Length: 299
Image (cartoon, rainbow, N blue to C red; front, side, top):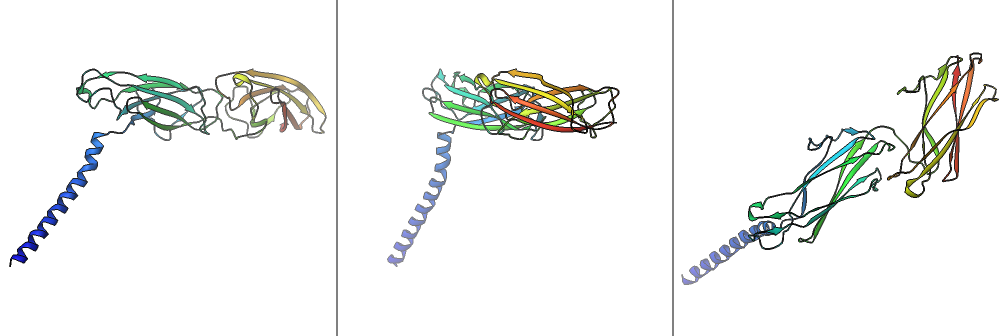
């Protein structure tokens, strides 16, 4: 009988030890998590206006628009003990505007957060705001804001990308000088191209296009030159202007395209038929050329 009691007491002891171990082990991660919060970026998003709502995923900015961004930081450490007075926060952050490839499109914006906190600020999360002016000559696609935060006292870093969409001109990547998005227009400021480029004799033939694939120099310098010729239906030259325009610029970012515009005034006596506009683009820095032909009709 004493042997049975001994085994039961032994069994109860093992069971009690196991239950205690399970409770202790399950509570340990929670206690460790509370004791060592992780550095985090919270409440962050892309906005159309300062302190406005975060834009939906299908929203499109346009080149030349301002993009607003705000964020908060949590899980940082401060100087001194948890209940000490006059504790100091030492955070630094960098912001960068990214292009479609993830490369930095504009210079980074740096900032610091060096506030003093009290024990009552246990759940305080500092907030910062920034804005970016989108450059005019960027193509449609997915861009982003990259935020990197460094906690000096916590010896921790965190980085996150926040994507947003830019509408406007679609440009295909080009490794050499090329003409894209060529369109004939009825008038200089038309926003929609002619489906059928037919003109009356004596009318002005307007054309717009985009130049891409050019090389850049120091300070993202660009130097392009373009000219135009018009050929009769039999291929003979009726008009030529080898240097119709020069485009020279430098900027803080690498332009993804440069727009061009041409106009040719036809004569009232011009015969009906299909004519050819020959556009020649010269990349003076990259020492490369491109010539393309486009058909229109005189009716």
